[in-house]
Image 1 (cartoon, rainbow, N blue to C red):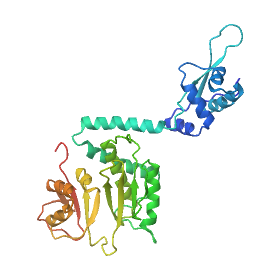
Image 2 (image 1 turned 45 degrees about the vertical axis):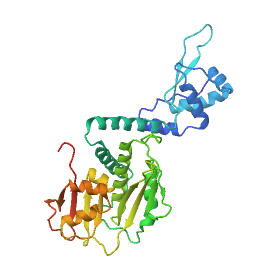
Image 3 (image 1 turned 180 degrees about the vertical axis):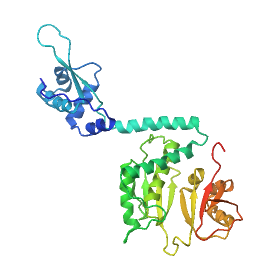
Image 4 (image 1 turned 135 degrees about the horizontal axis):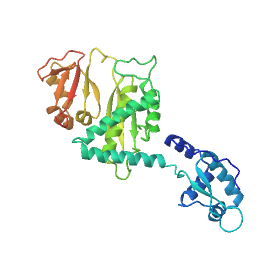
Length: 328
């Protein structure tokens, strides 16, 4: 008979997943075997199924009971003698359970977006940006937003390793770029099937990655997000250091919103001074036909005021690009 004192089952999902992740190989195998039974199973039955000695099964079972991952109950008497004890699994022994839950939740979210939104890609992108904010806050990453100074000796190439570790922790498979020291290659997305990636999942990844880079690059680089036309899961994230000569006071900051951010491949970038808004817009769309098409139907704010193509641009202007939003 097992001697462990059964513990109350974990009530929170986080506690449950942490316990399952800590199981030994033998405990995972036994919990998986118990999970296969819809009715309580005895130690003798488990020993016969696994071809193990009863004492070995009991020892492993003690560990599961002490963690609250197995429930013990007395079975109805069957003839003479003490009624046998039966065991039920409280949780499946599946290390991939968190990934399955994430895929199911995001799948339901994407279905709802397609049914309820006129522009689900832009909404998914914004959800990704919000996720980036929450992730940075949860991991207590210091903010390095626009205008924040880098610490003395800051090197963007060295900083890329920290960014890589952060993005890898969230399942994006980030590795150093083979030819660019200030770039990463992403090859995974944790909330979509690898064989058929959902475009909304990729848009959410895009938004999250861009937001993280915006907040951690110390305002020292322009961000480019290159999607691979042959492999939807693969993308390159390139940070181009800004020349010291192009400082805060001699450049124009361009911020893209919704579909404009998707077309530009970034949420913001720096541009050299231009005489008018029209001159800047033409330069931004040059060699980027998708962005040029969005710019043609967008409205603009210069330093938070409505502007036209003929508007003069101050040297350090902030230009916001606002594409037509779903619903007007």
